[in-house]
Image 1 (cartoon, helix red, strand yellow):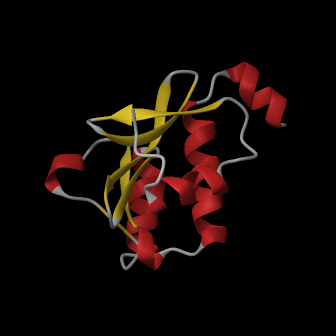
Image 2 (tube, rainbow, N blue to C red):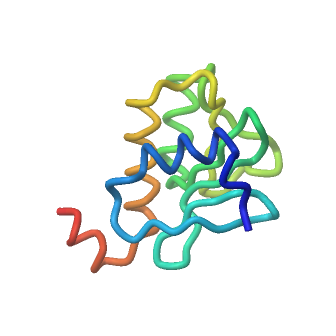
Length: 114
């Protein structure tokens, strides 16, 4: 079970609170948020979040804001975007969480959100 006192997890939960069907769990031994049983964001470490994102969108974000978004060789070619948690404000992180949720949410939940 994830550490509910993790400040980064608490931030992710707060910012995704209006998204339907969000569940707290774990992925690779770290706290994660899932929708329909599918991972859409996880805490990689105290400073980093991993968001799901289409590869093209990931590449675009890394290009326009490399101070916030990046990838390592491990994530190259995969629909996973690394985010420097301290470098992103809540409004932008909320938007990225909504996009990651939409990327993984079942159609029924996407329709509920509109």
